[in-house]
Image (tube, rainbow, N blue to C red; front, side, top):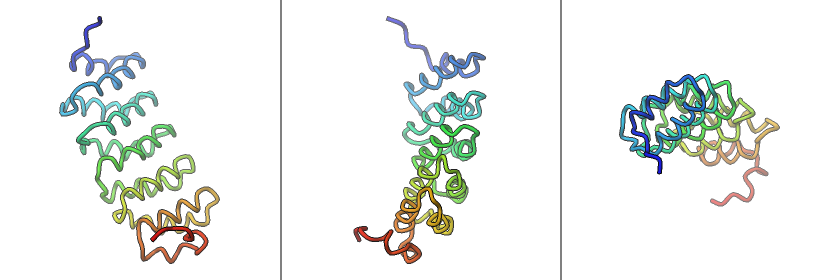
Length: 178
């Protein structure tokens, strides 16, 4: 039976030139206790890796951490703008898990509503933030005219802000339970 590598060994893998080793590091660090500041730092740094699979894995690993490392918030917000759609999508999914609905986080997700490849996830993330996502209401009202997810935008408006519900056309509100 192979001996399990130490946390120090796994952390060293993050700087390996071989992308497959860096991907292995992201997967292996999840098996260790997440109260290690070094592990959190390595994952935050991996969000800036040259390989999209490493970046996505690092974002996903941060989302699995309990408690969620708030130190990762700036890197996750940047990941929402990543050139790779999978990284952006994963970042949008992970951000609400951190439980921080500050203006920078909400603004990053509002901007993501304009990205058709992650629009659905962005709207879902805004719903998770609830009333803290009220600054998104004007963008969601514009999304009612979009061809992509108008029904989802209508539901999000109704969930985020009751008084803005009047902006949602009646057909989109029908069938909603009060």
